[in-house]
Image 1 (cartoon, protein in one colour):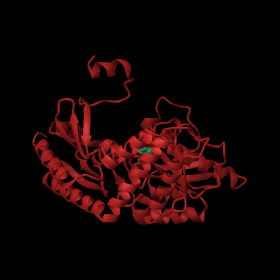
Image 2 (tube, protein in one colour):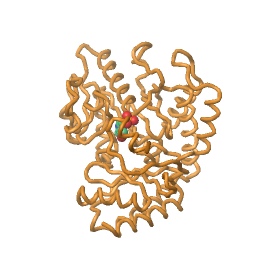
Image 3 (cartoon, helix red, strand yellow):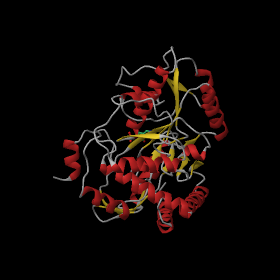
Image 4 (cartoon, helix red, strand yellow):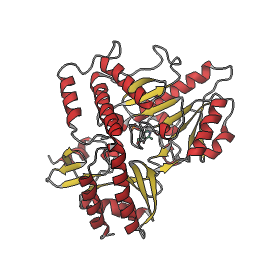
Amino acid sequence: MNIQTLDKKYVLPTYARADVEFVSGKNATLFDRDGKKYIDFTSGIGVVSVGHANERVSHALCEQVSKITHISNLYYIAPQAEAAQKVVEASGYDMACFFGNSGAEANEGAIKIARKHGERDGEIKRYKIITLNHSFHGRTITTVKATGQEAMHNYFGPFPDGFVYADGIDEIESLLDDHTAAVMIELIQGEGGVEPQNKEKVQALAKLLKERQIPLIVDEVQTGAYRVGEFTASQAYGIEPEIITLAKGVGGGVPVGIVMTTLKEVLCAGDHGSTFGGNYLSSRAVCEVVDILNELKESGELDKTSVVFNNALEEFYTKHQGVFTQKVGFGMMCGLRVKDGDTLTKIINSARKNGVMLLKAGRNTLRFLPPLTITKEEIDEGFESLHTAMSNI
Ligand code: PLP
């Protein structure tokens, strides 16, 4: 049976899939079933941070699979402890980690830590979590409710109580009260349209929350793992959150979610857990990916690639000013605002036909999340094809 027929018959239709089936890749280059070549400016929605079929990751995983992949969290797991050390050291924060399997699960863990911390700290139960409009925090019942997008709250209620949405950083202070357990933000909203928060405002918020002893949760599922130049966007913003969540790029394609926190004493044995989280396989991937990214950062290659990519994007933006209204983003998390939604869809389809993979995000944004290992040749080839793709718009 043809793969599309098989998919339509046996897979629930929760995704609007594009008419393409990839069979292999190398770094930022992909090949479909017909052997057609594509430049990947998406890295699988910010996941394949060290490129497709990275040799070091493949080698580490093959070696791990041949020894042991899973035994459960009832026992010590060496690669998990090593992955935690690497992640914490790369961040520079005095934190400890919990390992799950996805961004949403990492955010669930963050919310549980904040809520238990709120219970422990005083007589008044602190349960309220303030998030931002246009945010995206996941698809589970709790994280979908944490997401500040009304349209995503259809059908699935009743939801857990206590989520409050601020219309921007400025509004958060007025929403704080004795019941506030935490504030949860993305420093650069990804799904919401590659929208960076103002650095000074974020620093003022972080200071205020420390004074009020309210934990700040930074959702770095998309911004983490050097996506914006530092290991976490929190480092780039010069803040010290109490809780940070990571997923996507930190596993390089192996499912992993991490919640890391300075609140190391809040969760006790039995409070939280995961069957798969932090098993030998995913932890080994994290170790290898973080090593590779640390080396790229230290050698200066990461920052160089970011400059080359942003220069090419700027040139592309300038050439097509009639279609694009603004260049947005930070590091290798970039976007171009498009004049309307129909044009955005047309650009993505035309780009794919011409061999370039791109993403959509909120606020009519054409989103670029290339692998952090993308070469200059791949960048040049991708933008050359994109110029061709624009001639049909
Ligand atoms: N948080 C942010 C900022 C995200 O961008 C995403 C996914 O796009 C999530 C959470 C959810 O991650 P996952 O799909 O791995 O559950």
